[in-house]
Length: 371
Image (cartoon, rainbow, N blue to C red; front, side):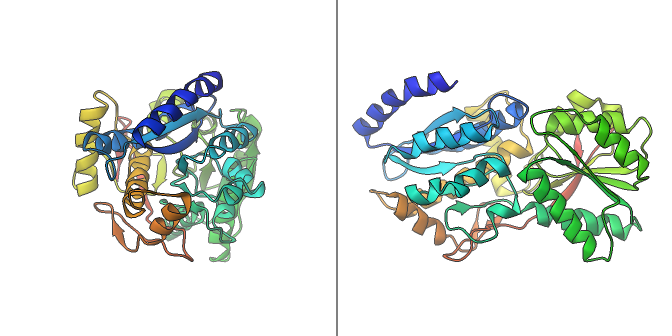
């Protein structure tokens, strides 16, 4: 994938120069444990960009995306992003994945040195939000918001013993910290905190630890493969309710873990329910998916990045016919109470968290999500 990307970039740049296109860079996990998620992230943005281009683009300029595969590997995210931002025609970055991956870009000051915005990353990690940094524009709520919502729901049911499965990296630690803080606000502590290593699905030790703790509920801060592996193994002896942070794909959980294991699993969500076209944004998404990605399944991941792409397109429109990286950032800051079609986002010079929307869904006996 990397060789292909390097090979096609000169053609893309020449094309952009000829037509004064707007270039947007996206690094996504198109291989490895998060591959299915990465492909859906790219698809959601692509559908919106294709639709905008079909209508003539923004100020007569077509939006062209340069997509590279980092395999969910931090060092690859860093390398590929540096290559992208070295080209001054890349005006914004869009839809990266991984708390640790994006965190590395902040640590190495890649975004700061390039003076470029990253819009709608697929992560809710608190270290990317606090302390404030001006480069990342979050469309989704944070993992701390999700944890608060889940813990509030569990404790309202009288549940006091809550365990956490978490990925042993910045992503997992951010989610764990969110659960710990939510429990602490209710004078409770985590019953057990068990980790697994990034880019594996080796969760046997974590299952044993959580089962021994006799938890009444488990909150997973995990990606698809290890989450499915945990649920499948945990059900052979553990009876607690299981919840997951929003980054999992329920269809993948059903495929990998089996319906008997994942039935009843609760998943927090950070964008509105995408399966019924009740909201204007959902109706638009259904229409554009049929037009530009016929046969592709709709899910939360591609809908979230579709909404993120709407934010970026509006910023490009407000940045004017000769946009710069700085102009895109100022345009993003001007999006106050901006309605995406049923979800409102707000940014400002001192706020980069566009939405704190959270709700919980449940996988039913047929493998579908219910609100």
